Image 1 (cartoon, one colour):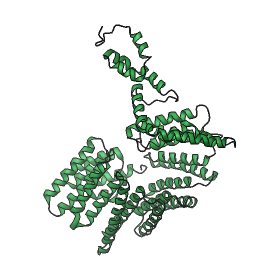
Image 2: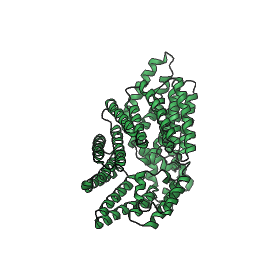
Image 3: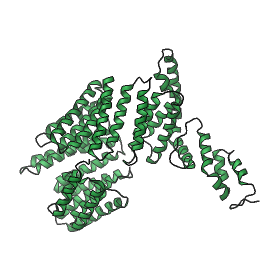
Image 4: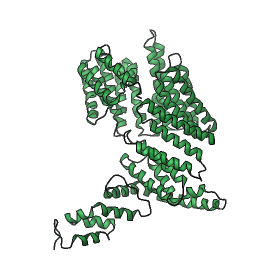
Amino acid sequence: MELTGYDIWVPKEIVQLIINQLCWQSTQVFGCTNRFLYDMCTKDPVWMRLYQLHWYNCNILRLNRSWYTCFKDRYYVESTYLQPHMEDIEKDIKERAESCTATSSKGHTFSKYLNNKYVIYGEKLRTILDTALPEDRPMIVLISGEQYASAVADTDNYIAYFNWGYILNHYAKYLSNESCEEVFFASFEKYEIAYNSKDNIVSEETLSRWGEAIHDFAKTKKSKKEIEKWLNLSYEKFEASVNIKPNYLAYDSWGLSLYTNAKLKVSQPEQLDMYFSMTYEKYENAHILQPDDGYILCHWANTLQHHGALAADDAYEDIFRECFEKFEITALCLGEDAFMYRCWGDALHEYAKRIIDVAEVIPDNVSLKKLAFQHLIRAGLKYQYATELKSDYTNAINNWALCLSTHAKLLSHLSDKYFQKSYKKFEEALQYTEDEEGYITCNWAMTLISQASKKYENNDLKGYKSLLKSAREKLETRIEKGDTWSLFCMARWCSSANKENECRLWLEKFQEKDKYLHKATKEQLSYFTTFEEKSWFKEVMQKAIIEGEDIL
């Protein structure tokens, strides 16, 4: 009898027994015969069995998906990311086995734990997480988790727990603030088990990484009290780490954690300077212990940049001078490093903006504008170096576009030329990213608005309207996707277009969702000059300040 539709000449139980004898390839082929067999072959229990047969040597963990989807996604991820590295993995297993044999007679346990093949697989998966597509990362974390679970199945393998905690923390940083908490807590748990292991001979590093994970978790919080609570807990881990053994990793991470706290003190100048000083002290300790580590110096320079941006007018120059000195030394340590050059460009751009702000209140400001221009040129060169080293470095390209926009605002007679250069950079950045958070598109839209304002000042109403139209179209695409930041940008668009009621509506929508207005920068608020004296605008801003007292 021909098998069509749901007609079949054998009992369903017999069909199930046949399916249970098939491998996964034959199951797929068998399911293509007709609709009845397709339904039988795609049932979850069938693919649970096939999954467990195919990956029989691992402790089975599972994502919140069907077993069929889990099987398909895992097979794809392993083929794409792990299979190309199998030769290196096998070589690593062999080399570590030889090392373990050489040290076992001396009673060393570290090599034994490090040699475990599941640990080696997990380590390789950890290294490829950053290069993986966002949709593939959950499966990579799941597979690495299985490897580490297998590594600790028969023994208290603290290296596996340590690495497991590390990859969970790393993965949590890719998740939204709403969905990352469970993963962070799982990371804390793994670090705690590793630290309490009787054989752990790297307790100080475990505590340091644990403190880093707590710091990363603190940055996901909105409430200042919650942030400080978790930051203080991270300090405890770093302090315990250096008490066991002074180490640069803990001091550097401690400095970064204090830097996060310093940024909470913007409205408290004395506290601000105190926390920045404490941050520099930790970086200095780290640098003394590891003078050749350029990233410590880079972190130090980045912190100085932020401090300089917030410092008083009589203090920022010295802070930026020290910042640039640190970058010079960093370059000697790191050589050609895209991240360093991007950060250096950011610092030069930020310094130029501070100079421009000062120049606005000084009558004879030609020399200051010339100085700002020189630093913008230098910033552009740093961004160029960064993108030459890493062509798809979207952060560097985006920040370069913003730097060109600042250039355009500074040079009235060449503003159109620099605005066009800026748009080309935004366009280039979008070639390498989906712009999931919408910041590049919103920055492009705000730059269009800035050029529109220039056109309006020069009585070019046609150019003014055309640019505003282009800016709105870009913002509307982000609003349709549910981007919160685009609401604020749309409010600024409405102010530039002199649409008062719309501006108020978008501002209120944004404040309702994000509570950001209380910390909006002077540059961001400059778009609201049309309505800043209006009573409703003052009320919105006052309400934002009150609501934002305990919000980061």
